[in-house]
Image (cartoon, rainbow, N blue to C red; front, side, top):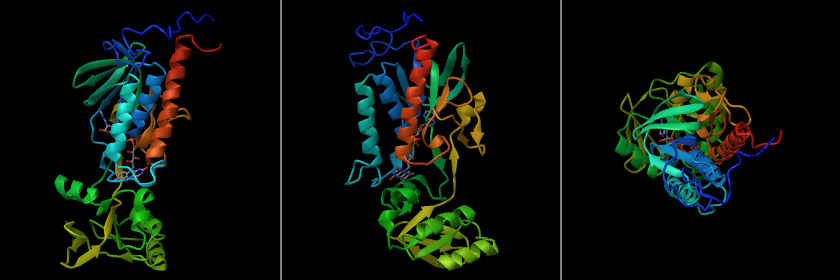
Length: 330
Ligand SMILES: Cc1cc2nc3c(=O)[nH]c(=O)nc-3n(C[C@H](O)[C@H](O)[C@H](O)COP(=O)(O)OP(=O)(O)OC[C@H]3O[C@@H](n4cnc5c(N)ncnc54)[C@H](O)[C@@H]3O)c2cc1C
């Protein structure tokens, strides 16, 4: 096999990434990869792809879960913790430094186009040979307005991820909002951090006799009267339908989440339980040329997992393109 198609690693590609690391002189007509989502998954893929001298474009709406993290204490390498926004900024700088293009906006649609895909973005159509879906998930929120929600999350009064931050809640009064099997599972998980655990719901909590027995055995208090209002002024005050209050130090929302899978779903990507993207062990979906990483794929919803799956996706994208272009060993 001749390698006549191999890019010259010395000459700058006028239509794309510059191997010297500078930003592209102008945008290519067809990107090697369009990355939808600029959270830790999308940005990790952008860093890797840019360092493979690939023309990578990230389009990001900027409302991801990482942005919400006040301080993460479980992300390796930051013994004093790191704010989600600060980590994102560092990753953006790193991606740009190697020549990735980052754009704020939304990818509203995606369809096949010749050998690749065309995406509808706010800035017009974007053509790409491959697409990485790093779109994440949206947590279902308690019924409070956006400002109150942001404030409660930033002050650690409202939380979404026991794996991430329950350690800091050790010994405190912990509430779990999600009065179903999922809520009870989360309450049992949190029981190893505190004796003072209370399970509540937006509707009246109904557990099976077996579940109630497990809750009783673990010493978890189950409040069957629905929560009607939330006050995060100081501590967390939950007012119930009967007018009584439950006060906790922190409240975990265990209300489930929705995967942002519309773009893949429209192309026919396989989903797990109609939610997360199903991929092979290289992050390829069942639609050739479409890859997925991060929270949007089945697995652990963590920064490290988002980064790991994205690194794997970027390597697969690069190698699949090399293969297509006759640049791999026969
Ligand atoms: C309050 C909170 C605290 C957390 N704490 C920790 C922690 O301490 N440690 C830890 O490991 N994890 C933590 N997590 C989980 C962590 O944030 C996620 O696992 C991680 O952000 C997933 O990365 P991602 O790139 O897959 O998705 P996200 O970070 O959610 O990013 C997805 C991006 O895709 C964009 N997007 C979606 N659809 C489109 C579209 N059509 N067009 C353009 N852009 C689009 C979104 O705007 C978003 O910017 C926490 C989560 C929350 C909510």
